[in-house]
Length: 79
Image (cartoon, rainbow, N blue to C red; front, top):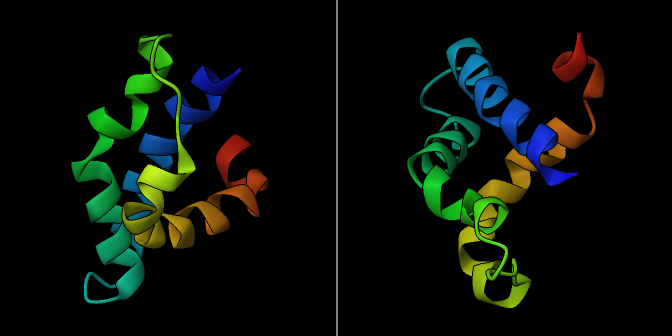
């Protein structure tokens, strides 16, 4: 169930990055997220890895701003 959401998130993030000022905190959070994409999505390809919120808390702070926009804007994601 995670795969379709994750697969649509990276292109959406890239599109959003092109639309906003590159000097904003949101742009910084998107670049940060995309630069760590392999690590963030590794749990999907390796069933032995469980996403653990406690270990991601520090890194999730910038990502949370991005995901909040993504999750609350499904019409932008799905057309």
